[in-house]
Length: 168
Image (cartoon, rainbow, N blue to C red):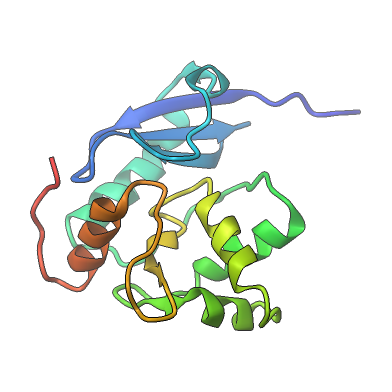
């Protein structure tokens, strides 16, 4: 018997602009920024419903208020096994710190896969909560980010306590 996917979504305001939260069968499956590069079509988000997102919304609010440094939410990832390994490893990057794509590749046991890690990182379906913004290029410089480099810089500065100002 195949379980039918029931998708719902809500939009919440944040200092980096509107965030669309998507749930599959009541479990968080997506967090997309308004101008995100790999944002799925809106018609795939399901019906509007705030109920499945109460805890995610509370934790995001606490994060942006500077009162939370990590997230404790059930999540479901739709991706290849390799992508899922990368997305799981992203959750181990400490708040306010960065690592390189190469270091992340080493952490998942694939030291020659820095580019593949970068591609998987770019397809992360649950931005901010799964902190792909904490991964930088080999020189320490910012490289691509689905939400745009200004948003990546803002999130990193915010986590380092440099600025709490809103982008918008």
